[in-house]
Structure formats: structure tokens, C-alpha cells
Amino acid sequence: MTQKTIMLVDDNIANLKIGRNALSDKYNVFTIPSGEKLFQMMEKALPDLILLDVEMPEMDGYDVIKRLKRDERTASIPVVFLTAKSDPESELEGLSLGAVDYIVKPFSPPILLKRVETHLLLKDYNDDLLGMVAEKTKTVTELQNTLLTTVATIVEYRDDITGHHVERTGRYLSIIVEEVIRSGLYRSITENWDVNFLYQSASLHDVGKIAIRDSILMKPGRLDVKEFEIMKEHTTYGVRLIEKIEQSTTERNFLHHAKIFAGTHHERWDGLGYPNHLRGEEIPLQGRLMAIVDVYDALISERPYKKSFTHELAVDIIKSESGSHFDPALVDIFLTKADEFNRVAGLFKGH
Image (cartoon, rainbow, N blue to C red):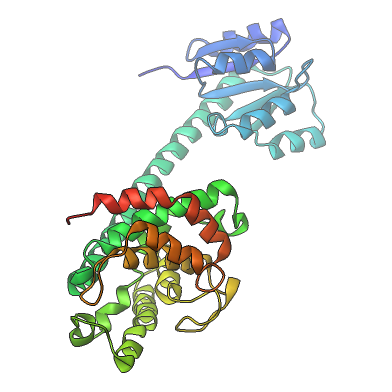
């Protein structure tokens, strides 16, 4: 069994020697005279536990642990303070900063060894639990993604004139969302998004078409006014279907975006969209994003009642409807990424 590694940080040589003697029979012990030297050492290898003096020149123990906790690589390493400070306020400060224990010097070597053993066992146990949670999360996520993909495929099979629409719009969406996030536009909204859920959920934006009868959904020509009114109901049907799924599962987070996409991707910035005639930023950001990618794909795709438009014409149409159909800020983002939309569209030509 591989020995665990302990890094003992103290500017007092005598304390380093006592600590090494207490622990070296059971662990790999590195004695380090300062906080700065600790970080230099950790560039080469990370320890399983750090024993850290509080009162050191230049960088004290509290500064060291703050820096450790800010770094994802080192944040989970258990830190035990070794200090001559025995007042409750100092101990509370150390524990508040994230230390797992606080040992007052001069320490008993057998007690130090036992405390280290205990914290390493707790770390192993915690790591095992985190691994189990990660595996469970992975399994649940895979099931969720499979459900979303399967349902979206069923919709696309029924509405077969839009072949690969779901896949294309998903790719377009990722292009524009990544640029929105990079630019900082609507940061207060996007910072709370799990983009993996977002992209998967987008595949259900037309799920309500399952409830539209074939004579309308697959009509080889333009819909009349009455038929179009029925077709528009796919947005509300989509929301209802997703709500039914929500009632049957405790894992609802992955459906949050899906319901918004389904219910709002035909809303318009000027309030003339459907089903709820939302206006401007009343429309959730997901719906405003999907409106652009959905219309772009419709424009460049051939239908029984129209030929496909060129990429350039589709871009001009979207640009001309900035502030009426579409969020002007998102149209600006779209225009910077239009060439990437064209590249994605080209991948599907002939399919």
C-alpha cells in the first residue's frame, strides 16, 4: 500500500524535527520552513495532508490556508494547524478558514500521530463518498440525456420534413450561447446555467408537435389560418407534456430549460409572438436565443411551400428584424458568429 504524504510547515527547525520523528515511520514526511516553500513544493506534488504552523514570518498560516482554499487543486487537502496559540478566538479563526483540526504546541508525538491517522481516514471516507456521488450523478445524467434524445427523435420522425433540425439548432445554440457567456452579456442570468442541461434541453423545444395531428404537421404546403392556429398550440402542448414528466420524477432540474424552450421560442421581442405575447425581456433568455436559431434554420431549409434561402439572405432577414422579432443584443452576437452558423449548415447539406 502506498504511503500517504504529509507536508509539515513550520519555521522552527526543532518542531520540524519532532514532527518528522513522530510521523516518518508511517508516512512520507516533507518538512518545509515556510508557506512560500510549501507552494513551490506543491507545484511538483500534492500532499494528502498539511500540518501548518500559524505564526510564521512573511506568510502566516492563515494566509497560507486562504491561498490553499482558493485553488481548486489544493482546496480539498486537509489542513491541521499546529500553533502555540491556545485561545478560543485563534482556534475559531483557524477552523473558520477551513482547517480540519487545531493542535496546540508543544504537542505530544503519539497524539499528533493519532490525529493525523484520524483525518486521513476521514479524507479517504469522504473521497469514497464523493466518488459514489459522482458515479450516481453520471448515471442519472446519462439517463436524462437518453430520454431527451429519444423524445426529440420521435418528434423529428413525425415532422420528417425538418430532418436534422434538432441537431442543427442544438449546434447553432451552442455557438451563440458560448459567445453570450464569453462577452458577459446577460451574465446575471447565464452564470446560473448548467450549459450541458441547457443544450440537451433545447432538443425538446418542439416536443409539443407530438400532439399536433398528422394532416397539419405533415401537410405538403402552406397552412391556412385555422391550421396555423392549431399548429401554434404546439408551444403550450410542449409545456404541458414536460410538466407531466416533472410530476413523475424527483430529478427535475434537467427539465427546467426544456419547458422554457418549448413555451417561449415563438415569442417575439415586439410582443406579437405566441402563445403569451410576451415582450422584450419578459421573454426568458432561452426563448430569445432559440428564436434566432430556429428562424435561421427554417430560412435556410427547404420546405414543400418554399425553396431554401441562402445563408446571406437568412442573415439579412434576421438583421432586419432586430428589435421587432428578435432581441437586438442577441442579433449583434449572432452577426459576429454568422460564419460559424454557415459552416454548421454546410455540414448537413445533402442529408
